[in-house]
Length: 141
Image (cartoon, rainbow, N blue to C red; front, side):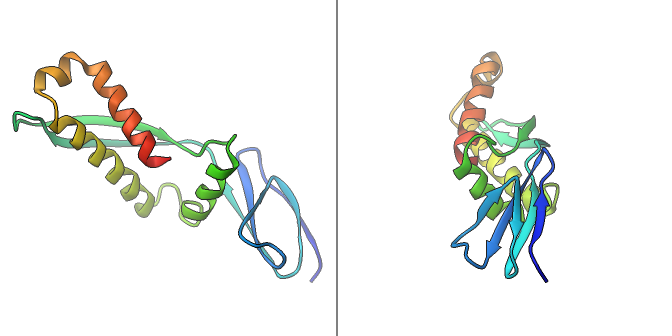
């Protein structure tokens, strides 16, 4: 078997491993040599919808609907490489990935909500939303 030329679609990258490659090589198009493996992975954004059950500082439970749009930063090669290694072997809508994302979002939301009163949460809804977003973003990065 000889060389094979592969081209990724606009929302995909090629992750190449094997012969003469130390870790993982990312490319949009490449010649795949014998002894190398190539997998395509999609970097398009995915929406995750959850209802987070949390408790505030006053020990009052509440349900917070949350929708997050998540995907890798296409301009950052280090981010794409991490995404290729951790997420691309799984379907983005798989139970494994869904559970991972949901865990991060729920944990960060609960920690933040536990330090605030109900009044602070709902009167400062925009700032609460921004704080949740920033802490989730930090964890997902």
